[in-house]
Amino acid sequence: MRFLEAMAARSNGGGTMAGCMLFMGGMSGSGSSQQHCILAIDDEETFLAFLTEVLECYGYRVITASSGDEAIQIYEERWREIDMVLLDFLLPPLTGEFVFDELQRVNPDVRVVLVTGYEKPVPFAMFQKGLLGSLKKPCSLGDLVQKVEDVIDTPAVSPTSPSAA
Image (cartoon, rainbow, N blue to C red; front, side, top):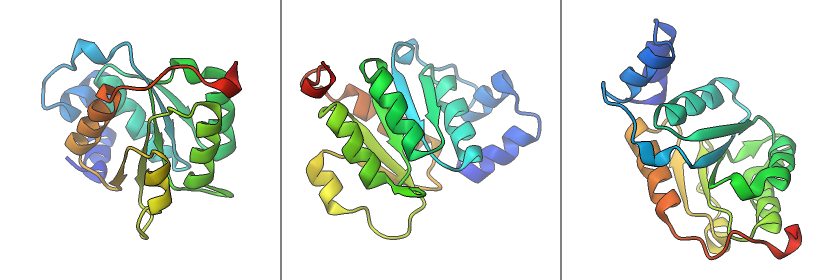
């Protein structure tokens, strides 16, 4: 199911539990994701709400930010509890690349996946710095959940950061 189809189903009576059943094809989420926390960053409120609902259906805790500045502030305060970040590329007046650099300043081991409708290719420099993947909007629910699971399962070097001590 793609983003727009899921949003249409959601707006036609898919409340929290009904929405979860729609997103997951009638199956319940795995309990293993309950301890994981995701920071979702997007300036499109509808897409941010969609990400939140889908990820919560799968048992993840979700913290949201609708601007780059808000995301940086949240990450500076709560980076130890955040297992991964889903980051939009265009966050006017900032870019996802700038936000990514700031998150890495706080925690060099931050796990980030770009989720964007940006038409140009993801800057290769972001992958060189440690970006763990990208998804193009609209992405399928299966691709989103699989990417989140893959990134969370990727071992981190250390949950500590010299700049955050």
